[in-house]
Length: 65
Image (cartoon, rainbow, N blue to C red):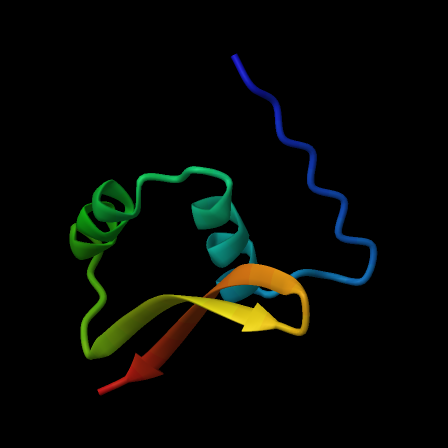
């Protein structure tokens, strides 16, 4: 069993948290399928790997359509 501690002193953005969880191994396909079961529509998810200087990360963009 793995334990993840999140201590957002000044808050945390949902897109940044989800992108970080994807980086840690969250199954992206299962996560997206779970989101489809919610009563939400008219949004688009764009998940991609990016480089910022020497850092590699996942960028999640959620846009209304």
